[in-house]
Length: 209
Image (cartoon, rainbow, N blue to C red):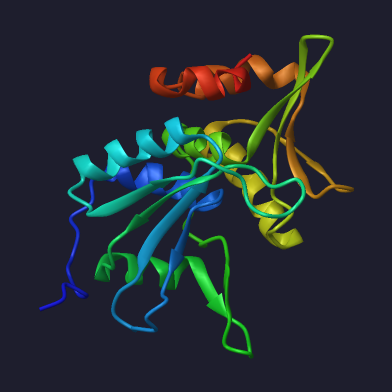
């Protein structure tokens, strides 16, 4: 029998990791159209990061597959990307109902849950996926998070979460619709942000000041 309705007993720490991944490029997929299960997928251009996530999932007893691409896509500007695909779980279907809404045409789109809570661990995963450090002549100037996929209200809510949960007064870049940690707050930000995991330092250590 297919384990479409298998439950997961996810740890609190893993849930913090998952929140950060979902704020970035992680997503739930329900390709089989089942109302009772779905899978989690993450794609990234850095294979070492995918392998790092694979270790997290293995520790949580989440069955998954890793696919490492050795060549870029067939369109200009494309890059090599690697992916992680979990099996279908009931637990992920329950989480999908919090993170997605349905349009009138039946398609799903990601939303920010009203009970979102940011932690240093969720911040780490979000930063790896959708954050970047801006340097000028080798001097860090600011950190930005790509939030343009979200609505204006959701961006304001994320700004409020930074203040409420992490004590950081972040700014909103209204033109680019992104969250910004200004230069004067970089020390505070990097004191809260966990250190770059050693297994991904070679590829992603440049994000840390």
